[in-house]
Length: 180
Image 1: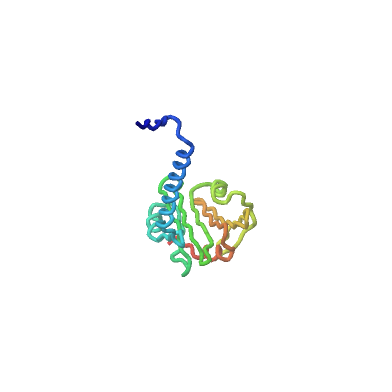
Image 2 (image 1 turned 90 degrees about the horizontal axis):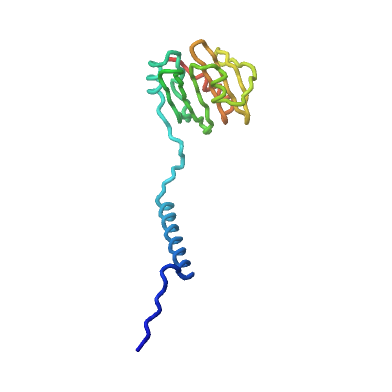
């Protein structure tokens, strides 16, 4: 007669069982990662262009101030963000990227200058005035060569700011702005 095989205790697994379990779990995680890597499509340009003209037209009807926007952008420039919130301070935002993918943002809101600067140009200091297309703008220079131009009227505070575009691009953008 043969003696029965000794039964293992279910409470204490052998070290070999633990190692096999860890290896199997690692292979499962690796397979899921590889599947995700193979089936993920990352676009070359993650910035999405937006159509801003219709939003500007609608916003102009609701705004109680002369809302600015370019009638059109230069050939290789593109809008990448637009929003208007009616009521309250009526914030208007239009972000654009130049041909060199340099960002310029337009902000208009019925708030005090200091409030708008704090949100969109924190750390900027006044650097005089500039004349662009017959209009005077206050210039503020900020950290990392950031340029901000500001106009304050009784109706609205307008701010054009950049963290990457040179002054020439900012100046060109300002010349495109119209309330029509």
